[in-house]
Length: 126
Image (tube, rainbow, N blue to C red; front, top):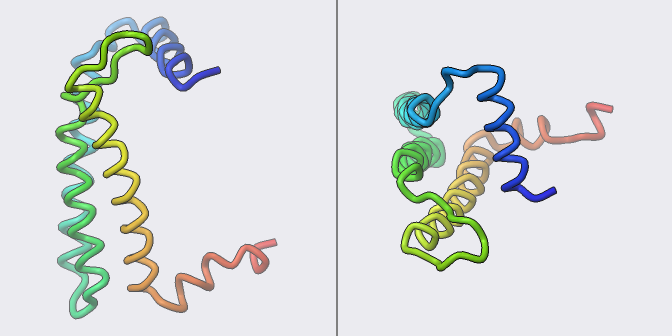
């Protein structure tokens, strides 16, 4: 099953269960999520103090939130149709989002140091 099939299936199931759930509701949900990312990034930056890696993590969270504000305007079209500007922008934003998430994890790990590594030790949790 492809990602598009899963996405469309979840939209259909959501509409059957919640008939008033519309594209406007989805847009509002994505908008609120992006604004929460920006607010969280500001909070991380504000609480970072002298930790440079944590300040960078907060900045990257803010950038991620801004990208998520733009993302709804770059929809991906179905395969087999002509590639448009929004398709290209969608791919670019997706790549940038993944890179940002990896950088956020990396800088967050550097900021927490040994404490982060201990939390990620799967042997100690088994």
